[in-house]
Image 1 (tube, rainbow, N blue to C red):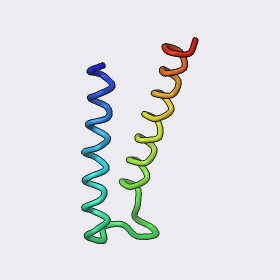
Image 2: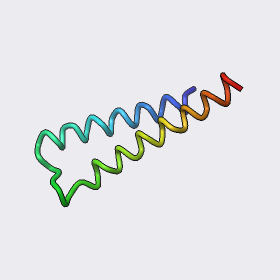
Image 3: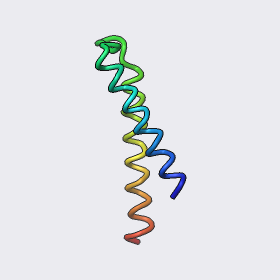
Image 4: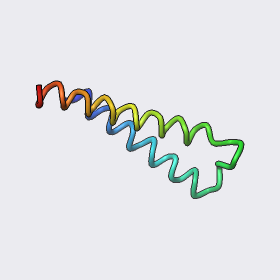
Length: 59
């Protein structure tokens, strides 16, 4: 759906930004909140997708 596509597109954009920030050395042991926030967002989208897949296609 469009809602799912929007979340995946947003996640891909955020991952790309994080990749560029990692390449420039913006994160270290103490300063990594942006990296962690994007990881949590991406995993949340994955878990929601798995739940919806099971609910819509399996049950």
